[in-house]
Length: 70
Image (cartoon, rainbow, N blue to C red):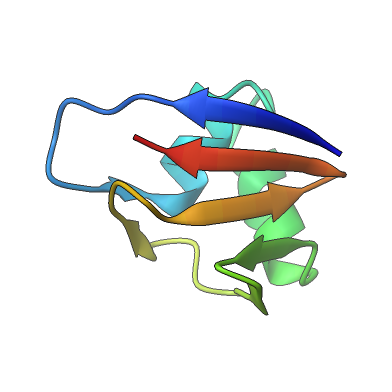
């Protein structure tokens, strides 16, 4: 499994936006679908909330890649 850091300049980023920013998906529609299909884990738990607020230190797992919010 590869790790990828995702740097944000704000207090938080929403889960669907993080997936787009990280390049894990190309569109918001793809992000929505992946999240609704339970393909995304946040801090080890399946997350179906695309508006989930992620802050530095949160870890997202999607398609075998770990994204760490910094």
